Length: 128
Image (cartoon, rainbow, N blue to C red; front, side, top):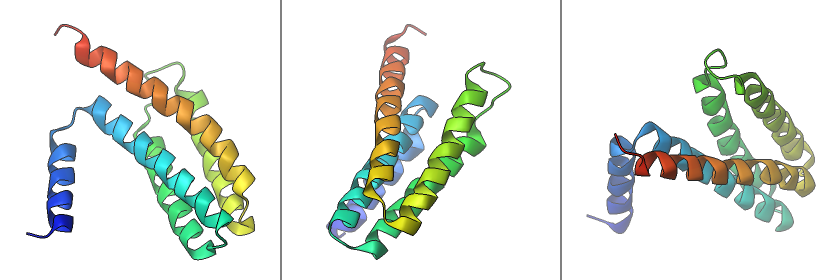
């Protein structure tokens, strides 16, 4: 089995056995990575790669938005609005190849990722 196939199998197994909290952190980790890669691609004047990374980031945000239950959590509507803002900013960043807009999105996403990671860790350590 090739290294890529092993990596894909490991990732698939990780996702299949992850808790909902771990899955959320995995999505945020990948979202942050996509934004970083898009920003680098724009700096390297590689619009095709930047668009691919932005589109993947947007797909993650759409998934986060679709799974958000705004009626269950009082912060839900604000988080939904934030996801919609991110999608709009990334659309403009892709059209204009604007690394600053992606930087603004990263300034929002990275602290959220860290907060979700911390919450997931505290849940994992809580007694059942």
